Length: 194
Image 1 (tube, rainbow, N blue to C red):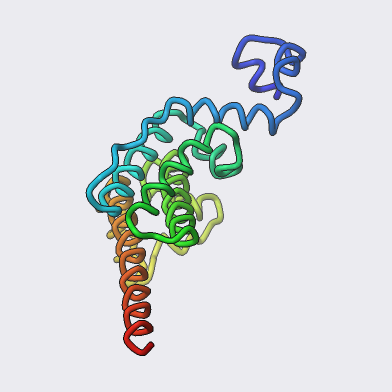
Image 2: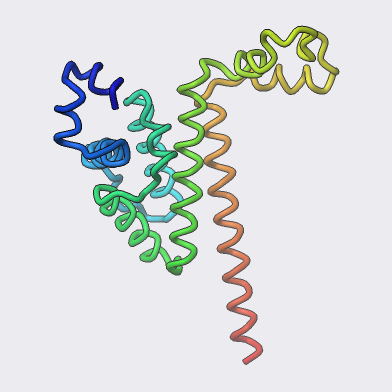
């Protein structure tokens, strides 16, 4: 709280007058982000909608340094995020998801977006991140990596954070689609046997 008060140019007492503690301050920060967040319009299909939601969430999080860490800590447990959660889940329900599947889809997409944004905020590039893991440890295994590990590092370094994000969000959406397809086939078979 002291650091926040200092950065805001106010006294600790002034900050505590408005926020009784750290959790209340963090919740207010999440609510402020949620208030500014513009949800995408309903799309013809759930996948396009979820991708647009994820892209907007990522842009919103990356636009406010430090917000990914706060969101990762609190998740959707604030009054201000209710509008976002309910709107996304309602649109998934309208697309044929059941409540449980819609809630899980929302959760894994937002978790991926926030986590990948937090990694991006904390590390300018993935190769530097890998190298930094061993900095100052002497005898770094990265100094003479195995051929496979060298290939992995090269692959990481050859792609931007945007490319890593795009691959990951598409893989998540593919997984959701696959599970929905399997569930649909099970329901169809169950009806045929009835």
